[in-house]
Image 1 (cartoon, rainbow, N blue to C red):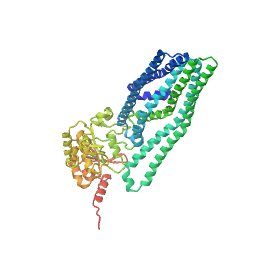
Image 2: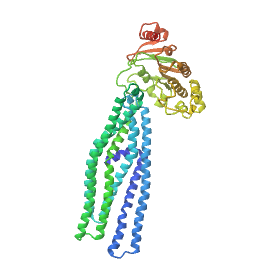
Image 3: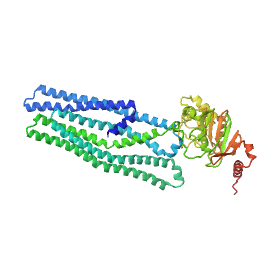
Image 4: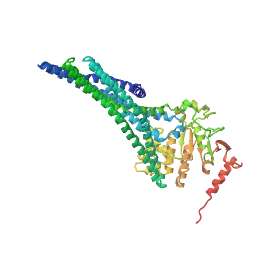
Length: 562
């Protein structure tokens, strides 16, 4: 239990750790004020036993009780505020830290780790920490501290009853150890079930078009339903496993209180304890039970807190590219050597699976080479910090991602402080100003991934405008015209021309139009450059490129006869 609490505090960072420590100290002080109810009641009991209740007895008892209530209330308010601030601030900062950390992870990490797992960590897991963990950790600490203080206070009244309470406390902690052990086996299953559920929900929603088109509703629904059923099962298993143990733990807390009352009555009857002390012991028994029950019930969730911290820390502990430098597990590109002169266009062609995308990923340092080097401006790309390296690159991908935001903010994504005039200027160069003005709110129209109001070509042109805003010297194009209808192709080609003027361009291409003006063409097959040259030189030699062009021209000449 203590180790889990220590790990949680270590996860929180120094600033929030100080807030939690202050909250615990205030919790100790609150426990002291709560315990003042005992002497307040003792004052009145002593007066009653004396048979002469005076005003000073009433005022003294009332004064101590008011001090207990006001002091406890004010301290609890401050303690709760510190807990809340520290909890939410910790999770807010950790979400940002995880996002920043993932920026510099190798792209292979995102292939090996599902979107559902990452999403679950940044949503469910972090929500567990900010809402559940903070309350659990602090209430467990406060319950145990209050009980410990009462044990110390009882030593001043009757050491025998203090020993009874100490023995009951030890049995309670032993029962809690068995509870923690049971929860430790279930907590990872719960987190994994949550991750699987998020993964299947995202998969179902993202693949909705394919599900409908291919009538896969039953199969996909079954996978989602299975994930929901598994989530229900693990949560039910947790309840069925932990409730009996929590009940036993609560029974021990009650039994401790009963033992304190029983021994107090026995000592009083035997004449070894006066009536005042006996009454104080009975009252203390009820306070002890409340403290132990609070600590015990919430301690069952400590294992969930532990697993949540571990899940978040796993991402943060994943080595970044600047640390490891090696993320390729198999050789997709091997023995490649090439130069791309400044302000030239290089087209990369070849069969599917030949290594085109991998080569571009290595050039952009989405992945790292395991031998040799990639240089930019005569410097190894590993010499750059990642931000300064990425400042040199702009990307226009085949599948454009538009954020759920205004068109203006999507265009100025790389320069959030850019003025609207600068956004409009980029949009005009990218040939998308006219269709943007035709939208309901113009540049303030809110769009997002999967938006139905924009065609593929229009989304591509917004992506090009975004790249123009960045104005990087190197442009990567991943078959930007592949999914564009003929009506939009001319506009898109004009936009690409405006984007790539006086730039170094590296493009993955399949269409003949795309490569005909390239300064050099690289033909990639089986991870190697099998041909290299201009369009004219490659057409004069037998090889993969000439075959490739022939097949494309033959396909383009096909006609449907009716």
